[in-house]
Picture 1 (tube, rainbow over the protein chains, first blue to last red):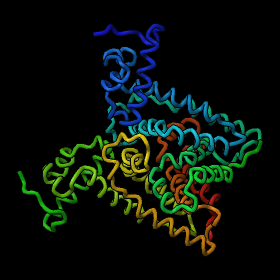
Picture 2: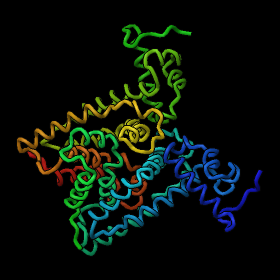
Picture 3: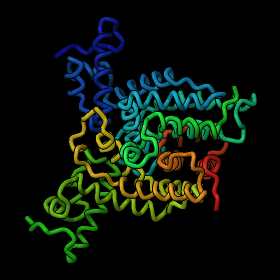
Picture 4: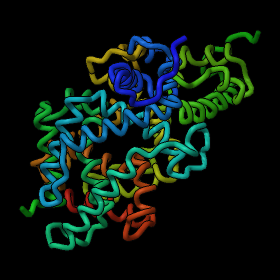
Length: 212
Length: 212
């Protein structure tokens, strides 16, 4: 049995990175409850014990990957409060190109979200002390939007929380409703992904016209 | 072991209904892969064999419940193409009141959706011949929107597929992004569900002004 290694030991960086990559795939396919740490270990060419040495639990591993995923998404789609249609278009591009990453994040919402939101269901074991990878980055984005409202860059009659929620939600239209791909194939006037993207950008432009 | 019963035998209606109710709960909590037929059978006070006698497979059982769920949602939120803000408000109310039903449908999207949409991932076993509970009702809704465009009740410059997608997506903003409940609690100007609902209705009104 391998000796457990502390996280971030430089000599073990390669193993740690391989675990994170394997975990991303495993979570995207199977969700958190369905993910198997032994499959992650095998794909990362290491042992289950080593995985637990780097990351305390499957949920903690999910959280580390989720933080990384959110950072990548934020880099690919930087929030410019004066040009929300471009932000929506960037998000659309990123998550249609990386549909596995939308799946990855959606599992977290479904498996951890309810408990976090204080739902009465209580079926999820890990929900009480579940990590909240969205919290920090979203608070910063809301603050950015609020400042834009103060300088007249964004209509101040919207709650900035709703602006962020609506723009993200609209940008995820195709990624979040996979049944639409089937539907569009059958009945859309223009069945291209470009047409879906245009509708998303147009909707955000109509709601929040760019001011720059 | 009980004798398998054909589906829809009148004398067994009670058992069948109990199975459907138990299945709804089980799928909403655990998703399709995570659902256990023996737990469904136990909750429905019947046997696993009886469940399989009524429904061929776990996936077929999900599909029957999903069809029922979509019918209930369609009754609670009837689509009037001349008043899409009301439709969005009705959907919002229905799925915030029945958040378990949004969870139920979200699992199906995540677990069956990718395969259905022809994604390259191919990780889902059942995706090839997976049922498509959304198809029929969505095609009918798109047709209704198209007719409304023809009689000048709805802006014809939108693809009706995008109208349906955007309005549903906006209506699901709170249900689909549970992390927003946390965020709103911390940073919203008005942290009430009524405020979130108003933003949804306002967004749909701005995009698709009612014509009735």
